[in-house]
Image (spheres, helix red, strand yellow):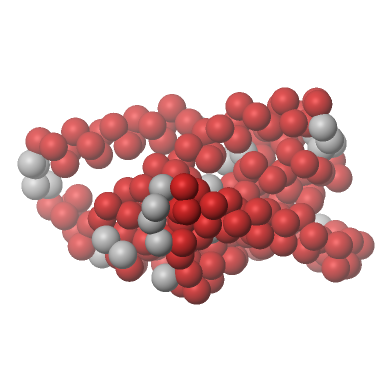
Length: 196
């Protein structure tokens, strides 16, 4: 999955630098809103297909919000701190970090709201968060605890980084990871909109 993502990014860079004009690519870039809505729809389908979700929500009750709240707060606070260190507007840093690893949505949304440069920064920043999550989840699970290993994944803890959770943690942590990813994914567009 990581190799496919990096390959797609490199292919896009080559396409952009070559100055090609394929009709299908022009159509997709001209309809980014529709592509984002389709992406949100597919995330909704994946959440709806998770069996036993209602039972787990009832079992954990309000405790299911503790991890996502910490992930969201930590992400936004880290973005504000990085923005201060890089001498950029705090809300740009908060919005970029508020993508919580969902690079496709964060990059396109921030690019549309602020400009291509910040959209590219958001895309790469959130892509790197996902890639680094693959590397540090095993270390965190082994050296700290299973629950802490959910945090680096952010919004991706329900999908792309879930195999790492399955491999290095237990069943309860995997369920909490899915719930965290669902809640964080729901709040990514909200956080970006509030910040920008």
